[in-house]
Image (cartoon, rainbow, N blue to C red; front, side, top):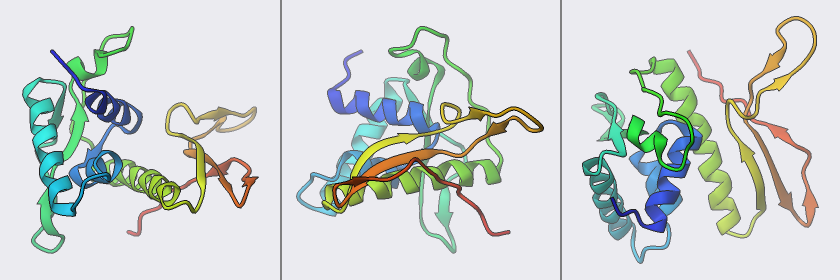
Length: 170
């Protein structure tokens, strides 16, 4: 199996975030195309090839649709994709709950928004740590905080480590 450097970056992003929409992948890894249409076509072609290689797959359900506009796939790594560049066996992905999926995709949306702000020169992204790597142990009841963290430079000053909470209206 032959993977390009961009393929490897897409797989790394999926390892970090677990689930990404087609739009996330396009905004993250295909922003350098001459047009939005060209970026969208190339994104779909690359994702289809990675699926054919057996390293990624899409959830059975899609995002969007009747009231949400055009539908799009939600992608995740297969166990074979998880094993690429890892010393441990790949994990199996079960169909996530709707709430969990919205949570994961919300965090990915925040991350890609920071990346786009960096590309536009509005800040410099230093770090964006996702779950479970951002979990911190604290003594006492509960003992863990589970918020993704980010640090960035704006106006030459480094922000303190920010905790990002993605909340969903019920």
